[in-house]
Image (cartoon, rainbow over all chains, first blue to last red; front, side):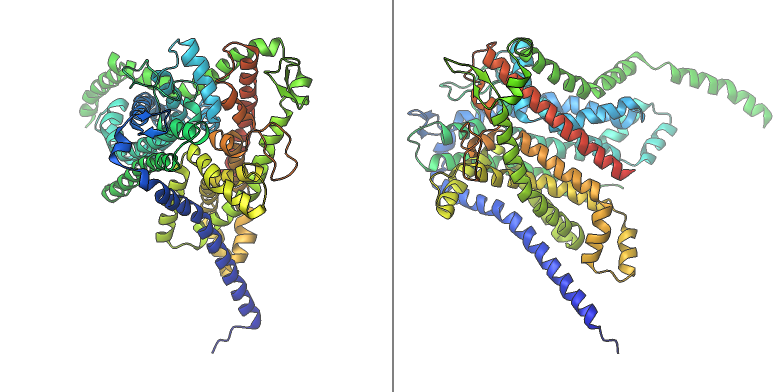
Length: 289
Length: 310
């Protein structure tokens, strides 16, 4: 019979301790997120009602609802995605299908990396300097959405690039061999096969722009507006900005209101992200390679 | 056979020529794709250009290097003596970032080790989704949590008069940068070839020994990059820090002193400074400092990751 020596047993115990330590740390890291969610629910749920979602804020924002902020957030998110999606996908197609491994390509990659790392407040400064002042858009939904689009561009490029690269090279070769041009191959073979991945990245970036505050602070979002935006040249309110305003700037706020606003924002983002998670697992089962 | 190939040759020639002369529509589209490919370079350059453009009059006029980077007094709206020294703000930013990384890096890397080396594939998927959700919580909600949850917690636990301080901001920043550190760290660990682990285990090494003596050295650069990207995230965070630090302009002497960071200063003051004024331009100059910092951090992180892959 084989008996483990004392030495081996000691090792075994040490190993188990190590494992337990790591699993405890991991568990406790995720605990705060769950606690925060739970606590937002408890505090915010009493104030959450259909009226809260569908009414305008009144009495210096201390009563009423958050309807205009939701509308504003939708405007911002939709326009920013309309701008960043085509640009991001095209950039990713270039990097994956056309770019050779040259110094220029490395420069592009570095630029994407840096674009992703630029602090959001610096994006806000850029948006203010470029869109609001230089292109004369004024503080408007358009300027704010463009700023958000620039912010989201690296996210979309990276996720699209990943899904384009995941399409096996043999697919492309087969298409070239039947005489399709490079562009036709991209249009009819590469893009349809990577569409799920592109969509997932897109949905993810929607969630990100819905929660962003700093980048839209000076480019198109107002603390309070008595009317809904009529066109893209109007200012708007946004959920994220509203949460900032009512939790720091407004005196005499009923306690549940900011909680309910935070809850709505979180739920909006989490539901959008869940869509992306579900999409991803759905398409993974249907993948052909 | 010979005749056949003779016949085929002109057809092939013709086909080749046809292929070389693409239709105009295709050329236009390919041009657009190429232009789109360069967009990120153009955008980075544009960000630099427009921030320089707005801060330019300040940089060539009022700006003094020794004052800007040497004075602790940031007093842009003072009546008697206006001064633009950002030392206090830099100290605030550094304090909060370093402290948050002291919390987040060891914990995050431990977590990355667990998820990459010990987890069952099923649990790994669950943790990855949790990480994604954690990463999706917007910074303004973190700021809200700082004010409403951690603030009273700090007041009660440490018996201090106010809970919006360096400690609060560090905790929030640590929680915010964890997802990034964990996922980049995990990538780094997974990039270590499986054969390394197998070789070590075949020699009788326990997981602990594999982790500390094989994986840690092999994935060192990637793990450092993970930490560095966390630093970048912490440096650039705006809303959460604005809400959590207490935003009072002083050099913090203890964990329980409020502080003020570079990012939060821009966010708080830009709205109130008149467009085109000196104060406004000085805030853009701070933006330039932030841009440079994040650029340096990102390039170093990229260098570390690429070094690993080679």
